[in-house]
Image (cartoon, rainbow, N blue to C red; front, side, top):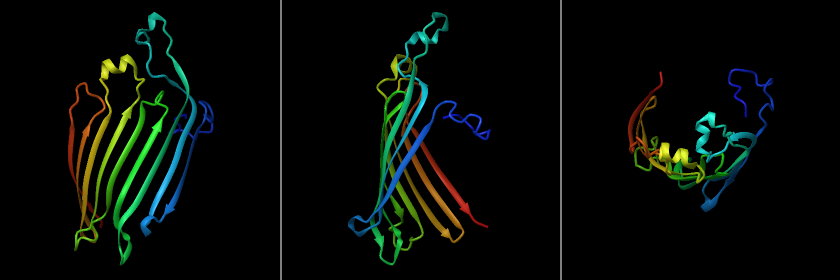
Length: 204
């Protein structure tokens, strides 16, 4: 749980508790097509600032202590499943993918998450080297954010979509068009974000 990006980490070992991460991934063959199912989880016994603090903690002279909460957990599930596979090349095809996750909701700000999409290699005839993806996500915020966050940020659940298409123009030249639309979690001072991008990848 301790930041060790600039040290070896041995001096801080267990200084703020432990964090455990575990997951299992299973290859499946539903509909006689390849896919994967994954379940994982994260647990820590570190201390965090609890959500829903007494507003008076913003004024230290009042002597209201910051509430601390020990421990946090998150569980998640991923899947991907081919729906269409090229009979001449099993590595080519397209299908569904998704993720669902849930947390304790305090101290975690994000209480649950869901995403779903379609992607893979292009089904367009003559564009077998291209790929595409369409994805949607939704983030449910914790119900225990408290008055401070609600007044300052006016938070709400966040949602967004992304669409991309990567065209292989030559063996060494790829061009990707991308569009993202996001309804942000913070309402105060923000609007719907629309981002369009174009990326080129050239190998020499």
